[in-house]
Image (cartoon, rainbow, N blue to C red; front, side, top):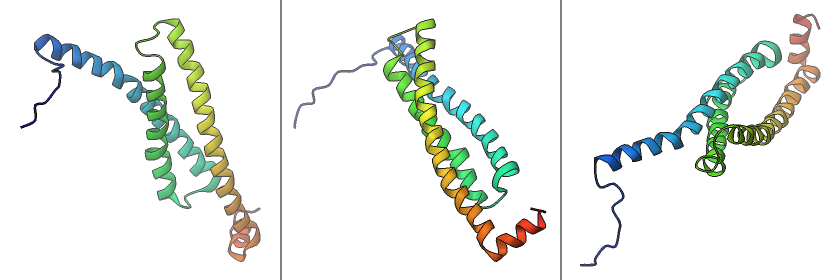
Length: 143
């Protein structure tokens, strides 16, 4: 039998409590940014449905805005915060650095989403403008 070389990290009650505390410190950024992203995406979904394109492809809009986007943004921001800020900075310096990372990442996500929306909204506007069914719908809306 081969002998295993490993080190036991959690050996007693005090180590378990310390490990649980460290775990929560690393999970907080993920959960906080996931919840904030979810809240923002619910607003974006409502605006998209009521102001922009209506209920066309509602399943895909809901999946994108309520599942994939919050997971992606929350995961990316949580990971960046854990890598660059947690255990390195605290206080105002950490808050400023978090703001800078948020600005960079969320503006990148915004650019990606706007590019996708412009592509698909442009496609649907083209269908409205240049098909018989689209012309009928525009006429029924008084446009």
